[in-house]
Length: 395
Image (cartoon, rainbow, N blue to C red; front, side):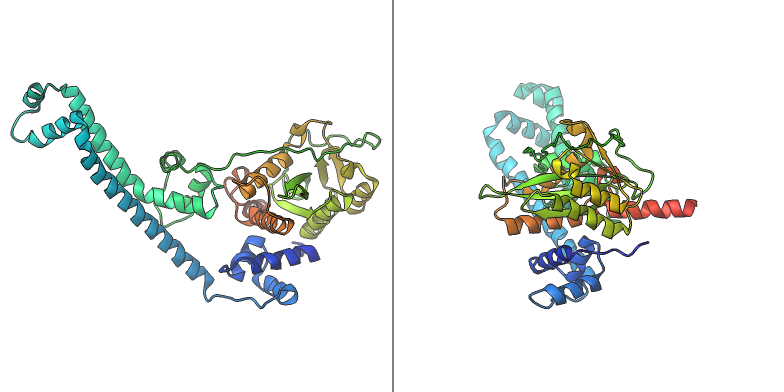
C-alpha cells in the first residue's frame, strides 16, 4: 500500500481540531482522522499552541464512561415509568369508566366478571379489551426501557444524525447487548420522539462555461466500481456564514467505497480549490493514474488549469449533462448529508473558523466512523479495508 501524504493545511486543521476538543484524547482524534496516534502527536508538537494532554488508558476510560451513561439513562427511564404509573392511578379518578373497570378487576376474586359487569352496566368485551391493552402497554414499556436507553445513547452520541438502521448497526456491534431489530429501533425512536435532521437548502454553485470543451460521460449514472481508485466523483458546495458570506467545500469521492479521498475548504470557488482536493486524493492513494474523475460542467472543472492537473496525474475526465443533478447524484447526496448533519437546527455557521473546523471534523469522521448504508452500515474506510482483504484472499 502506498504511503499516505498530507498537506500542510490538513495537518494544521487536524491540530486545530484536537486543540478545540477539550476532554477528548489524542488517540480518539487520531482514530477519527484515520492517522497514526504518533503522527498526530508530532503534528501537535510542531503546529500546536500547547503540548497534548493525554489521559491514561483512553480506551478503558471511554468504555467506562459509556457504561455509566447507559446506566444513568436506564435509571432515568425507569423513574419516568414509575412516575407515569402513579400518575395514571391518581388522575384515573376523573375517568368514571376506568374506575369501574378497575373495580371489576379488583373485585373479581369475590364475584364473577359477568355479574360485576351486569351490575355496573359495563360491556364485558370492553372490560377485557381494557384489561389486555393495559397489560400489553405495561409489558411494552418495561421491555422497551433498556433498548430505549441504548438507542438514545447512540442517537445522542451521533448528534441526532443516525436513523433507525444506522443505530441498529451500531447496537449490533456492541457484543455485550442482545440482538435488536431495526423495526423495533424505529418504534422505540418514535416513542422517544427521536427524529433525525432532514433539512435541505440549495444554492447554485455550478457556473457552466459554454466555450470550454465538454468531456464524455464515462459513468452514465452508474456510481460503482469493482475496486478502489478506479472511479471518482466530485463537486463544490457552499457553506453559508451568518454574515452573508460563504465558504466552499470541494470533494473527491471514491465510487467503490464512498470514501472521501480528497477535499478542500476555502472562502472562494477558484480552480485552486478543486485542484487542492484532487492533489489530496493523490496523496492518499499514492497514484491516480488510469482513474476516472466525474463532475458537472462547472467552469473550474472545464478550466485549462484543472485539465492540465488531470493530465499530469493520468486522470480521465468525465461529465454529465448540463443542468442535470442526477448525473452527479453521488456527490450531490454527499453534500446534502454533510449539511444536514453538520448544520442541523442552524441555518448558517457562526463564522468561517467554526465552519472550517466543524466541516473538517465531519469529513474526517465520515471516512472512519460514520456508518454508510452503501457500505452495509460500515464506515467507508472500514468497508474498503474489508473489501480489499476479501479480494486479496480470493486472489
